[in-house]
Length: 260
Image (tube, rainbow, N blue to C red):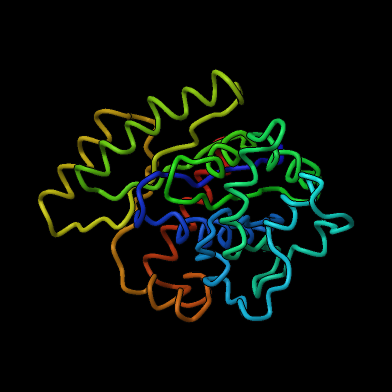
């Protein structure tokens, strides 16, 4: 079954964009057609995919504007871009998306606008991965409403643990109750894990104790390679294919696919 998966956490700097890009690349490497959706006005995913922002004429904002009736005739196929990776496409973002946060508030059925954009694409892609902004605003709610599942990247830090609890116990529950009863938690992904510190090891242990089988077996360790690959406009699978980091995302891809 084709799936839409949000990569979400209201806390910034936990590896959402890194996970969206590299999980998408790993799933595509296995022969699946994948669409990445940059739902963050900061456009970090778009930049990380190597897109020249100065030449980007259309973005997710234009698709939202079309749904609102503000613009006519902009087909989604003209907004989606190919990436350097086989089977991996991108629905890009730019700063214009920040206007959508205001405009969506005045729209009918505003929480389901992204769903209406992405649902028709499920026949074309095996997996659609949404990189959510670091907030619980209308764009993130739209992403969760459109999604079948949510992956929650979480830095192995005590404050991040509290943030994940709020996301799961408050936001996800509200979205399930009011907007998307079929939304499932695919898993919590420990990221930026520093095996050298006792604190990080203790938080990972508490995470597994508290959330049990909701935590992925894969742990993404802290590595400078991720920053280097972002500067290069490449996934970690392209930049350092044989690295431990690339292997971790390949393992995560198998976990996500085998989730059913």
